[in-house]
Image (cartoon, rainbow, N blue to C red):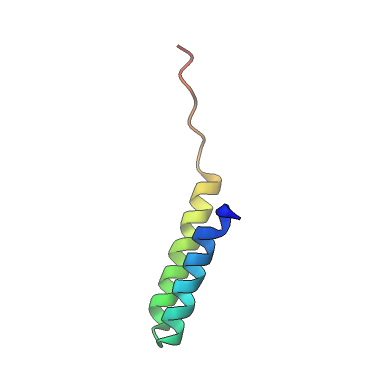
Length: 51
């Protein structure tokens, strides 16, 4: 359940911004979160130094 914390926090922020009629900002937060998730998924893994 601990892994859902950041997801739930971003969801709460987006819902709050949308309720406050700041939908443009909510969209920006959503797209930034999506970009970060995609980046962490596709970024190249760091290789360990063999020494």
